[in-house]
Image (cartoon, rainbow, N blue to C red; front, side):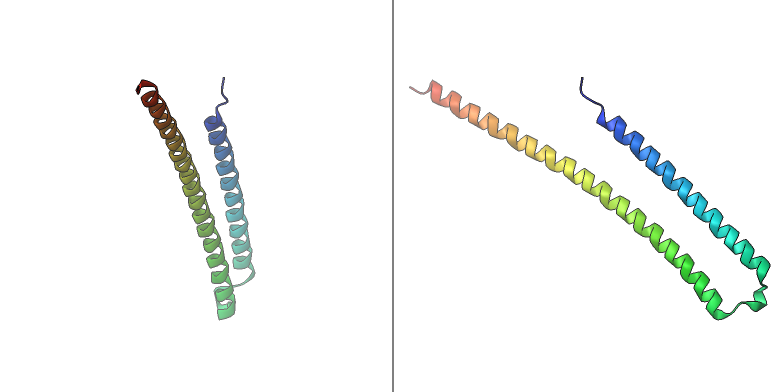
Length: 112
């Protein structure tokens, strides 16, 4: 019996998605804790433009990282689909070549 690779891949993807989600949740908790500590340590009047710029820059870096991860997953998915499609084309070409060869052989055997 052939191994069921599809189910194995689905399970592996589910584990990876779950691990990514828990990592993301931990990062959000860490960010919230840092913001809470910063809020307790200083008042809004004590913040400088540099402090705000640093905070915004960090948030933008995190967003950029998440977008790049998402785009990477999209490229990987597209590559998997393309590889599967290429394999099907090669298999069809191989079958067509075999059929043409068999037709030529049958035609030669019938000719006087």
